Image 1 (cartoon, helix red, strand yellow):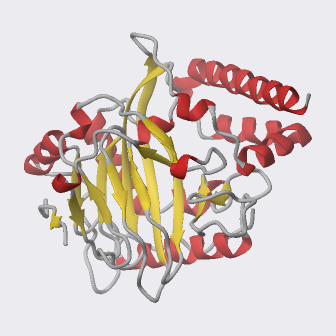
Image 2 (cartoon, one colour; image 1 turned 180 degrees about the vertical axis):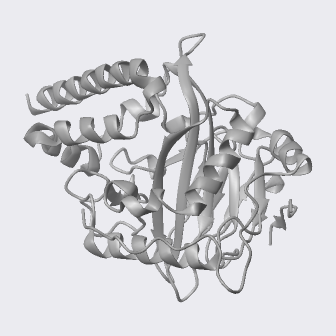
Amino acid sequence: MRRRGPSAGSAPAEERVPADQDDEELPPPASLTEAQLLHLREHGFLRLDRVATTAETSHIRGVVEKLFAARAGYEEGAHFNFAGADDDPAAPSFPQIIAPHNYAASLRRTDYYKRASAIARQILGPEARFGGDHTLLKPALNGPVTPWHQDEAFRNPNSEYREISIWMPLQPVNEVNGCMQFIPGTHRGPILPHRSQNNDPRAHALEACEGVDLAAAVSCPLPAGGCTIHTGRTLHAAGPNRSTAPRLAYVLNFVIPPVPALSPRSFPWLEEKETARLKRMRVWMRRGGVFVETWRLVKRTEPRDYGRLLSELMRKASRLRTLCSRRKAAEQ
């Protein structure tokens, strides 16, 4: 067993958002201690036993279970198989939904979301913004491994990022059902070389192919409603789910608005990607989804970021043109 980390102290799914306090528990803290901040700065990750109330955790679990059951966002590429090719029936199953708040707005109306936002501002500063959310479901008994990777390896290489992710399990997690694991200190290093999982460009997942010191890995078991916090460069992974129940997690991402990279870099592992998810997304965008996505982007943009919004819309348009050009070239 790996050593445990230090405990540093398209379907509507709307229900009543639970209050921050019930008869049995007080609200979790909405800020970190200096010791916790120091741990995050030194190691690149932090484990918290409690960041959401029992009522909030239960509410979020109920919402995401309904989204997975309805395959919300599948046609637009938001719902996909993280561990393998969507169009391969033999691939291991690991469903993920990107931006579930698009299909269940209550996810951003909980006191948990407000609490997480306050913690993000404490870590990143007042410029911290909501960067997105996603939810993951590892099936019982044979939920596959999440390979070692850095989140920034999924980002645009032409920009520099400062970001954190708050990973909250919706049931207790340990090494049996796939708790988070980290390699301390990797956040201070570069983006490592990555590749598509199993060298299959049809798979969404990435895996670091150099610089992974498994002997240094730290496991972070948690109760439901606890969380881990990690930076965009911290190497992390999660083991398989060998339990008899599905493992659900909900992740919030917060960012400082990215800036142009100081020196050119490329992520060839992204350039090779050709997933079924991307194909569905292109079809959906051409059929009018571009207007839906634009409206979503406008809704979640703060007034202070309208200039950045215009740049983001131009970037997305350029990306869409590139994807369409690749498709035409492949068909010829």
